[in-house]
Length: 175
Image (cartoon, rainbow, N blue to C red; front, side, top):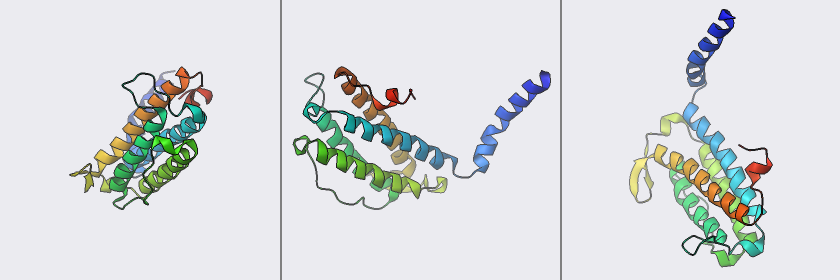
């Protein structure tokens, strides 16, 4: 029993070393988190009925459609900083453009962000990039993206639940 416990402790102690030995642990982790968050963002947008894209829980909050348009704008800024290239220009959409156009644009936006993350290495995290009008380490944009997507998915999940719709991550057995 002691040898099993010692093996478990040794495994935990060496796990960070093994992860670091894989190369690019930070960018790899960011890609994995973004992949899950992006999948949830898109699935939540698809799950909300078109007639509910004008829904907002309180007068002070964005409508569901405004939230999607906001994510699109943030993705353009953030993923351009991550990839150091301009993300393919999309026409600026508003909630009045409707579910089909917003969801399709969200899918393209997530794909563009995923492509920017795919080229990323840990060595590039300290590079200065233009991010929201100032020079910031690329890591700020990467962390901002995964944080933003988690935050916006939680908003979507609340909007869905308030409309009697189970969010995608809940349908998948939780996170």
